[in-house]
Length: 351
Figure 1 (cartoon, helix red, strand yellow):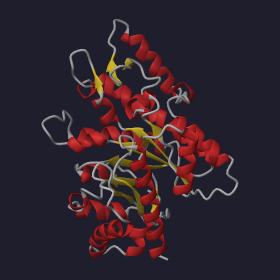
Figure 2 (cartoon, helix red, strand yellow):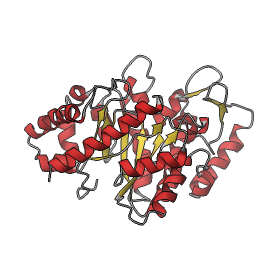
Figure 3 (cartoon, helix red, strand yellow):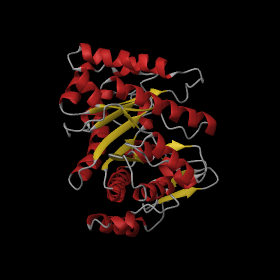
Figure 4 (cartoon, one colour):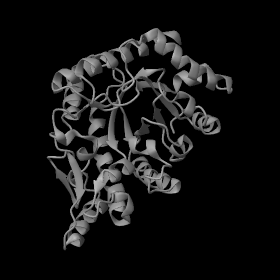
């Protein structure tokens, strides 16, 4: 982890947006989050930008059901040759083979173009995101109706495929000449520990850590994990990530139950991305003052554990609780603007 990274309540988005105007949306993102812009996933514009479908491009045995906007595992007699080709490209680190096409990540290409042409850019960072291996595998169904989480052969391919696609994304974002940040989005882990989660704690850590280690050995990117519900946060932290992103509006108390893990994480240089602006819980009555008070309650808990507020500030990012792609555009716009305003207030409060 990079202990000398100072965020001081910079804000950014989670990923999905409900907008259709690619350029206009990216310009708004640069205006609202000039120092930590994120490339948006236009989930209502194109099914290819769905978080799971987006990372499926170039991976073997995986097909898209366009009517259901879902993925499935396409078993056939010659699985071996398709998997062999995949591993040959992976082992030769052929990142171009695993590149995202513009129709899958229109927001990435447009944001990079705007940053390149923005002479007075204030950006210090640039953030992107990929679906995590647990969430992605959980969305893949085979002909027997089981998810890929039950299939070790498919899981190995998924982990390696996401790792090298993440590498391509980081290299692409680095063209902006900013510190890159890549979030691994794992909403599926909100249900971890339930009877419907066919995966063990040690497996979650190992799968995610393999991706992290792969990226760290090849880039200097910062890596985060986003989970928008309650989960085993000590498990998330044990993966070795740099940034942990949680729903701080609805699950603050649950997150703060993991005192030792959080303290060890901060001591090691970790950053907390507080998802303080509600998304599914948004009512329209929220104010910057209310959210600031709510955020400070969490900050004060960690401060009372013995961490200075200066350190907490340096290691804090603000985000929405989750992506805003399922919301009405006018509501999503208000949430992102509210987040930007809160970031400005919090940044000024520490100077």
